Length: 337
Image (cartoon, rainbow, N blue to C red; front, side, top):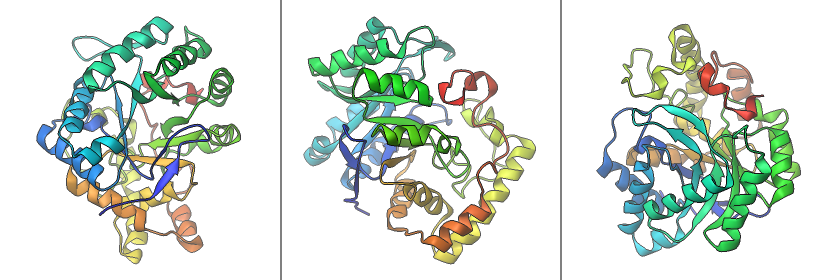
């Protein structure tokens, strides 16, 4: 399937494909990976018209950027030319894969960018954002450092990630912000109260990750699935015990709606996020070409008023059981404060 649908990332950002490809799972946090299939999936996405590739310099401690760099080098000329890479930075890791906080100091921002440019094999980063707010560094300083990289040509656009309304306002007062990357799905709707209205007021787009809640509402996850020790979901509250059973019950309600429309559960869930506004670009975390094809099929799904009402009855706001992150990780989310 090929898509020519595009959306603008806010008033100041680039125009990108209506769906972006989140590449994290190709390197880390979801168990074992298949490098050849990952690269083939990136190539297939580019050939299908997907232009936005999302990564983080800490995904696999640089592995994901190297993977994307290889995929772009071996892609068709048209694919390379249209690709836009969004990079998150700032997470501090240790050799055991542990997490040690976030660093948003201006010198660190430029250091992280230098390494990303090298790993990606490019002369610029299209969208650059700190992954989580560094509470020891004013957001004005972090964003100001990215703005300097924009002036120097190393970065094209400034983004934000998982920050609250107050931080969004302070960042936007410092420099033009293209988009906010934040979790948004049928079962993660916390942004609707204050964060999304603030972004819209300021002309900032949203790149929504977790639109299938890490596979939970994809229609492919089962209660008896065994997760690897290196799979984030093994620690995620929504995938535990009674929470998982409850949440999979929501999926079955969605499956009935999807069946009536002749589409998959994943396509319904992605189409719902697409329906929330032209300023929202869902990121799909497909690691395989078949899952990518399924996700792209959501672009052809039209949800009318009765469809949306049925979805709302099946999965109302706040219906999920369990937090979206373990308690320790929630503490790092400015968006949850």
